[in-house]
Image (cartoon, rainbow, N blue to C red):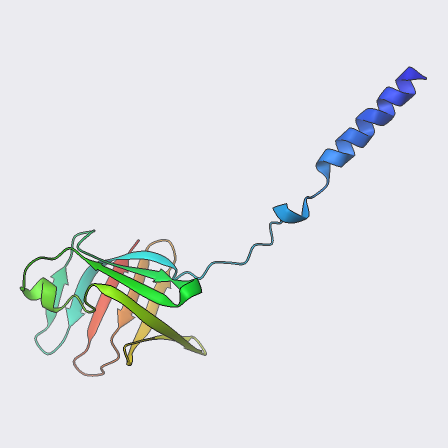
Length: 141
C-alpha cells in the first residue's frame, strides 16, 4: 500500500512540475530590431563626398519603441566636421514610423529617414532621404 501511495505521489509530483506555467510562455512578442542603442560608425555622401568614421561612444541613438522616442547622445566637443555631419543634435525626439512594402521610414522633426539596412545584432544604415546629395549614416550595436 505504501509503495502504491509513494508511486502515485512521485507521479503527481513529476507531472505537476512539468506543466507549463502560463506566465512562462515562450510566445513572447518579438522586439523591434530597431529598438535599443546604436552607435554612429560612419557618415558618407553629400556633394563633398564626406566619409567620416566615428569612435564608439562619440554619438549614440537610442530608440525607445514603446514611447516612440529617439534619445541622441553626443560626446563630440568640437565644431569640426564630426560635429557638423553627426546628424541630430543631443536631445530627445519624437519618432513616427511609416512602413510600406519593404521600406521603413522614420519621421523625426518633419524629416524622413529611410532605413536601408537593419541587422538587429550589428548594423543599421539610414539614408536621410535626399536623392542627389544626401548622407548615409551607418550605426553599430
